[in-house]
Length: 443
Image (tube, rainbow, N blue to C red; front, side, top):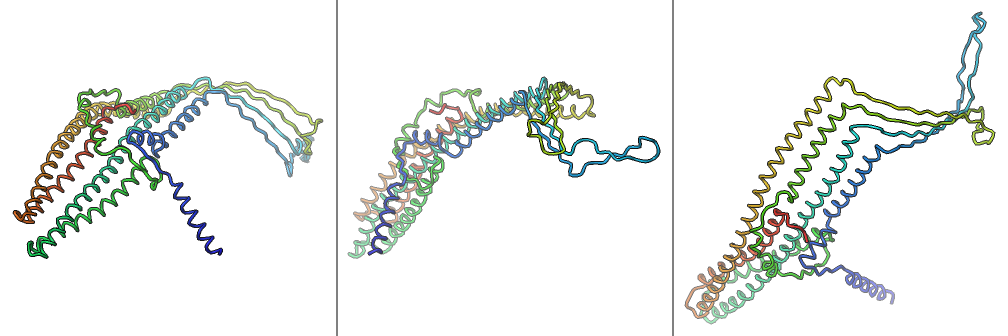
């Protein structure tokens, strides 16, 4: 009896776990929004901004008051003996100076009054934060494009399977007719064998498409920041996405260099090189610090420092420290010269970025226009290939044409089907690339 109870509990637990598996119904727009918040790269980019904010505050605190406390406790296990000859007769007397134990407690306040490097450091901290923010913006654009491509790949896998199953139904019907004709002496064995070859190829392609579909779903989950086995139900279809991405108006949009994230990153890189040169120059300036110290000391031959009768001797010190760089054997000038060269190189890279990004925008527009042209051509060719294949089926069934002619028409149809599906995906992908190149705001 216990055996059956255990088996029942096992299956009950298994079904309950399956019922708890996460399922997501998601459109492309929702997938992009979800990934911007939850993808691995987006999460890391957000953490980098938090880290940069802490780094900025860390740099700021260098110029704020610093308070440090210190307590020293000493216990001479064996005190040092001092020899002295007071009478000048060559006989040294032994003396023990001080107490066996002592405690010295101090608290020190320090304040930076002026340091050129600190001022540059404050600017650099702001620039570092800006770098992290721009990196997050770049990550968002990349994540958006990645999700769009991954979503499209899943739909292509689904569409490919749908087409393959339709082709299988058609070929199975022709193969069945060919076998029946061969049995009745109306067709040759070669006709049957030809369609059996097609059957084997279609079955292999279906198995391959199923594996690719499984991988495509897992890649989409990764781009979303999900576990790879999360069940996804895509609410958009390949046809609706193609229609949504057929937008010729975007080709007339002008390229705004100042809004491009890659250009902003190049500008910030140039700014960091400028600050580096300024930092090296600032090292030739003097630095000024002030400090205020308060301390108390107690001495005893036994540990009586916690007693109310213990005497403590106070002391306090106020001071200012001025550090003036005088001569570094031209080390500072060499490092400043290196920083100046780095700044010049950054200016060159900035100009290169201007030209490269402008060209990339033009190229993206050209690729998008080409993808639309290819899609329209592939759609027309597919329609023609379907008509040709149907006519060849009718002719073959009536015995007017050979199986070879029908097979050629089928192969042509399969080729056009693949070209059409790829053209659909290419429109979606090139549109996403163009939007990135134009730095279209993420909605």
